[in-house]
Length: 583
Image (tube, rainbow, N blue to C red; front, side):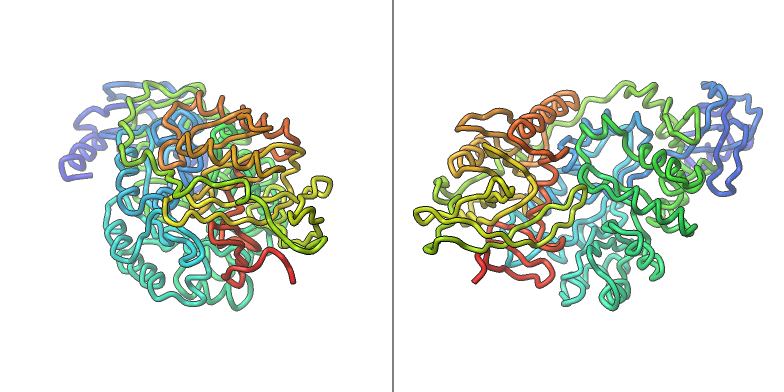
């Protein structure tokens, strides 16, 4: 807002000039007082000027027909890359659901392309019918020395990004950087605080003295809670908690059930999706679904709506601009017929009607993706089938196994005994112990690391993806080295994506040619191709609802207990590489 805007808004508020728009006959849920007020809303220059019944002077009028009016919803932490869509294509998925603001950490692109990639991404975030604010990636690479990435962000690059007006926070910082500690990463936290910005947390698995030390470092929040006890421990230390509900990280029911049962204050709670595929947004919803589900679990509509609006606005120091429908705030709001189940009928951003009845209105032409976003999958060497075979001299071996936990980002460290035939360790399909490989894709080393995983249930074939947090090398799981090789070669040819292979044939392929992370196609096309790769994985025996999202987290060297990078198997708690075969 500048002086000219402010002068016009004040003139409209005092009745000296007409409003640009009057939204009349609505029932406003006042998130400050908890009241439901029958009123009108007068808008000038994209801002709310007046909230008062009986407004007459408006250049345009919109009859709310008695619908409830809520502030636009805020996703407190999201990686847009994990939606597989460009910001413009994502609008069609989230805006009709009432999401008008994203707090976005583009650490995936940063790991692929560094500072240049983040700046290129921001060019795609212009001219949208919703708002994107930046959580500056704090850990690129996530695990220095334990993985290969295509980009890095040191303190100078982070300082440059934090100085941008759209940068509200330092992005999630994992415990290894704080508790060790890393002077570079602590300096990033101090720089964010010096600029009056939030330093976001990622406290997966922390408890007791370690959690206290983490909070003492100045981290402000956590989105990694999977139990109510974890949530309560963080709230007691003054950390805000983002209740996450993504495609494979399903934490909302457990956390909200505990909050309701124990009648815990919700002012430091927010919602986030973190990583959610567009097909799941289409089927369930977005932040609106989180609000509705929380109400269904017993949270009051007021508390649930605040978690999606006022709470994140206050946390990120945006309360004078967002989070409430009140004078001086941006005119971002949602109209819904009910409060117990949120069903956005109309969505407004900057006082403009941007969505109605589940459809985006007048989508703008998206900017062309930068050329540098393409051709980022560069294999230094062509892998061979031997890269996907573990050799041993004994008749059997004991191996470490990454064990999936359904609907969670964390995993367990398991052990399995596998037979050896002609020097080759044989997967155990009956016990669902399959080889998983990570293939370096930046043309740096040509590394291929091999381990084992339980939980994918494949009876034949292979699946692979170039979305592999946070380094985003290629991950592949399969029943045979031949199919694993075919899958990797397919992704090299498509410049990234998700693929399903059986007996040397590609059953389904979703190309992701932008940084190897995102599609350049529209929502409908991406959802159609995503459904095809999921269905193809199911036909191979995979029981997971979101197999490629589950696959993408197995490479994390920061989420307990094990992660796989191109350099090998990582013991997350010890923060070191370990052998796959047990002595």
